[in-house]
Image (cartoon, rainbow, N blue to C red; front, side, top):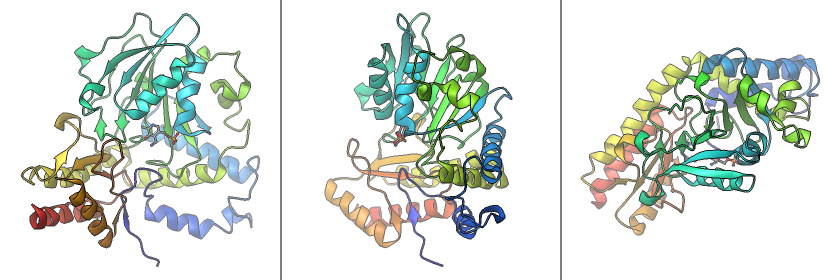
Length: 362
Ligand code: PMP
């Protein structure tokens, strides 16, 4: 078998090895068709079965209400930043955004191009090191929706408990923690996630939408931008990213076989604790970016004493096949992305290396 490293990249990111192996086995002959899944028609039975099964599995894993719809869309989570206000922010209304990081800001800025927006809370003043407390959140009266980012990929913070705002539709960008823990989907009007972190490869964005939200879609948009077009046509109005959906299907099956979301959460907590414990026991050598209470279980961000040591850390880690640890330029330092597919052994290897590096350089 070819060499595999521990891939800590933020996205595209590590995929479960059994998924890659299965995709490799299937590649030349998908379901006995004599064609690869890359080649079959999106209108054919073989693909359509896979497509429908993927929707059903996604809902099943999340425990989504039966009348919610799963949509496969293009343009990444970034397209959703625009589509959400285009569909749900009519003239005269205001949409609330809780600003917890760069992607929340981008979503907010994009919505501001469409209509009136309000920053209901922001942790920008402390360089997005935390999630605003409930008493800091000031919603506008009759907001069209509230938008949150459940996990902040760049800063390494995560809502420890997802918020609820009774009476206001809740929209969430869950790109970097979807399917990493159970939560009550029925509290959300719309959830979206680019697949390339916890779901599969880049190329497809998975959207889960309630019937109430579908009923509110702006009918004056070009049809390709209306969520209802995807719902009515089972995401087959245009050609979906068939190969990406296929890999998502395999990832969902892998998740189910490995105990579903409750088991994922337990494993994710165990994995994150290995790294945060190494950080906390380093006597200040490593400094976490996120306030403890809001530490992400998906992206662990930390700094070392000085950029030279940080560069040495990255290059020594690479020698040990620990790849993709350099943090985003806006935070600096390190970021270990430890999505569902990262095995416990990868986190243990990183924690061991952190202890060893601190001993030699502290
Ligand atoms: N939201 C979050 C939370 C992300 O982490 C990312 C990608 N890193 C995006 C949005 C943007 O996603 P895309 O590149 O799929 O548009």
